[in-house]
Image 1 (spheres, rainbow, N blue to C red):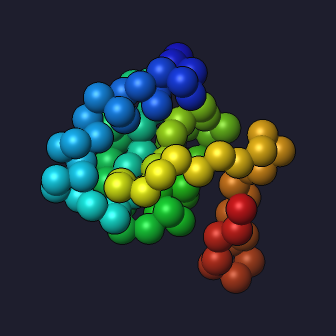
Image 2 (cartoon, one colour):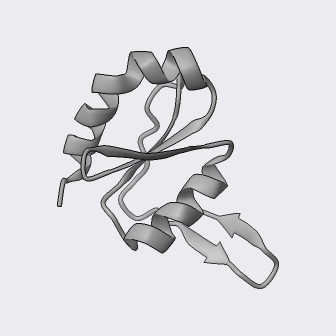
Length: 86
């Protein structure tokens, strides 16, 4: 399984094409492969957790600078009210 750094490298390799075709959308990469493009970070996170559990995977808004979060931040779906939270 690829680590997060390898997923970042894979994103950077396809960044120009993604920015040309999907600016502002959200990309999900896992194991150095583009899994899918999403309209929202919530959709990307929900799919990532369903398919890959704790990861590692990369979710990045196409065209936005990288966001660095502390390792203690983890995605938790809140099924009670159908909203997502980080």
